[in-house]
Image (cartoon, rainbow, N blue to C red):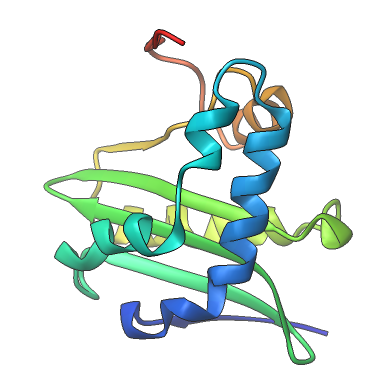
Length: 147
């Protein structure tokens, strides 16, 4: 049985292993930016969220027995909501866990009266682009970066 619940920023260390799996996934699947993903680290990435509080950031986790198997981090500020990071352990994908997390976070952003809700996805990550399109997310702009 999966248990979905929210944690605080102070408890975010619980998702470190999942975040690392997410980073490794991007490093492995990226054609052009492997080194960028390789050089990312959890502590630096999570430190960027320290400026948010419980009213402007939501962190949800999915736990199965004693294992964390998924998470979602979302921010909402000045009417702008963004899914910052989402990951479901590869073994548990295809079971609706990601959908439940995204639905829960979209609902939260709507409660925060976000007029714009977005997510940044690597252009190379076609499966994730397809996943988010099911929720009504579509490409708006394309930021290109030199290799």
